[in-house]
Amino acid sequence: MKKNKKYFTLTMSCIMICTSVLAAFPLQAYATSGTISETELDSSAGIYLEDKASVMLSNSTNKGNLKSGFKTRSSNTEIALMKAYRDRLAQKGETYKDYDTDLEILSQYIGDDGNLYVTAKETTMLTIAENNVETGYSANHTFVYEQNGNEWELIEDRQLEPTGLLPLYQANQFVYNGSDGSSEADVPIINENESDVPEIEASIIKPDVMEGDKVSTRSGYNYQAMATYLEKYWSYYNPAYRSFAGKGGDCTNFVSQALREGGWADKSGWYKSSDNWWYNETNQTWSWVNVDYLGTFARSSGRCTMLDNVWKLRVGDFLQVKAANATSKTHSMMVSYYSNNTPYFTYHSSNRYRRSMNQVLEDWSGGTYYAYRT
Image 1 (cartoon, one colour):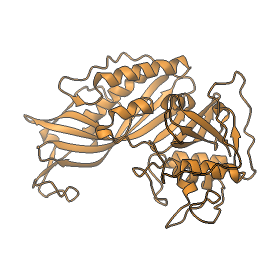
Image 2: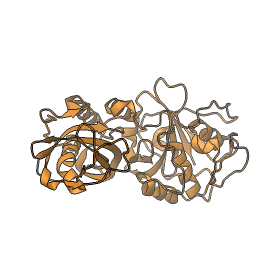
Image 3: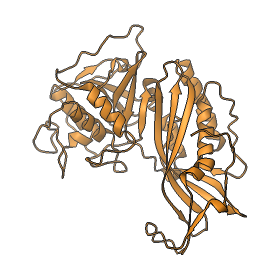
Image 4: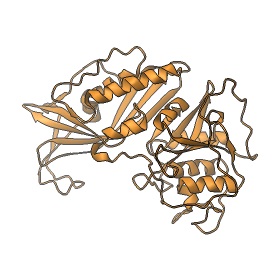
């Protein structure tokens, strides 16, 4: 969705007035409710989000000045951070030449204050100039509209999840009420005994000479099936599996789903043991959903070996991260694409599509990385 109009208002003639109370919002006392269409949302919030995305382009002339009176936690501070992030990526050989932003309305209602609250899902894609790879993210927002005369005016963007236009550690500070939607501690929170097979910290320094094709740990795995699964369900979760988003994080659950899709067989046994790995309609092992337990199972079972450098990861391999100042690993993500000597990761919590290694290293700057060859 790209438009040239630069306005943030909707005429009241575009608003459809309903005569019943919204069942989804029982606390509302209003007998009428205003609604807007996605086309109308695009003409206000969509324009605003595209204006932000355009900052990431290498030839951007966006000044980053939000309209007077617009309430947002981001303001011009976020724009300044985005520009610095864009420039750091450019120094690493990653620039962007195009963008696309779409919005999907999830819910809307009139609040007790008379404002219109529209919760919507943003999906923004950026095209990498050097290889035409599309990278992107999805994140939910609540947009607040205030009646101004005969117009609805967009006055506030409440970011419910971190934007992908910044490194995660910076994006989290702009999330409304501090609920960042990221995977800070996958569930359940536990302490795992050390595996007999040690976990090796991977270097993040890009080698001058890159390795050739992937040599798998075991034969018979379908790595393309893993990648296809990741890129199908990265933003719209597979309803056949439980989601742990908002319950500690869905990242390891998503990696486990892709591993199973690519040929990993369930290993039955006590669900709390890292020797086992399975999922059924009522329960799952801790190794299915917990970062540390999955790593322990992957090593002790012989299904994975450790790589000494993150840049050696290929499609179907996964990376685990311990964030700076964290006491345990906090995130799992899998490679779904590889191009120009760069792995690209697709993952949940937060939802990201083909996020480059350069971006990942920015997301968890100062973190510790563990690279798993499947």
